[in-house]
Image (cartoon, rainbow, N blue to C red):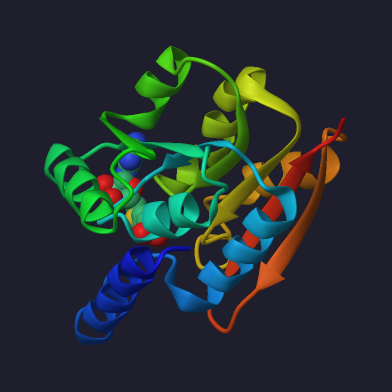
Length: 185
Ligand SMILES: C[S@@+](CC[C@H](N)C(=O)[O-])C[C@H]1O[C@@H](n2cnc3c(N)ncnc32)[C@H](O)[C@@H]1O
C-alpha cells in the first residue's frame, strides 16, 4: 500500500475516533489486508462504500493492476468515495457507481475474484445470489457485520455455511464478526 493511501486511512481512523462512523475499521481491516495479500485478487467489487475507507483499504492492498468497483446507494456518499479515493492516489483503480446494489449488480460487466458486502444487511443473500454468476471459482466473498446484524444476515450465513458452494468461516471481533467465504472450484 502506498504512503498516500496509508495516510488517508490514518486520517479516516482519527475521524472515526471523534464521530461514530460505521466503516470496517482497523481490526477487520487487518484481516481484509491479509486476505488480499494471500489471494491477490485483481477484480473486486464492494457493495456499500460510505466514505471510502474500505474502498481505499481494498484497492490500496490489491496488486498494481487491481481494480475495484464500488456500488453506493447514496449519490453524495458516492461522490465522497470518489473524492477520497482520489485523495488516496487511487482514482485510476477505484470506480464508483451510485445506485442501489440490487439494481446495479446485474449491469456490472466482467467477472470478479473478490467481493466485499457491506450494504443493506437483510439483502446480503440476494446480493450474493446476484453476484454468483459473475464470480470466478476461488473468488473470496467477505460479508461485514455478521455479528451485530446476525438476525438480518442469518439466511446469508446459512447459505454460505451449509449450501455446499463455499468454504466459509467466521472471524470474530470484540463486538462484531465478518464472514469470509471462498467459492469452491
Ligand atoms: C456500513 S456502511 C459501509 C462502510 C464501508 N464499507 C466502509 O467500511 O468504509 C453501509 C453503506 O451502504 C450503503 N447502502 C445501503 N443500502 C445500500 C444499497 N441497497 N445499495 C448500495 N449501497 C447501500 C449506505 O449508504 C452506506 O454508505
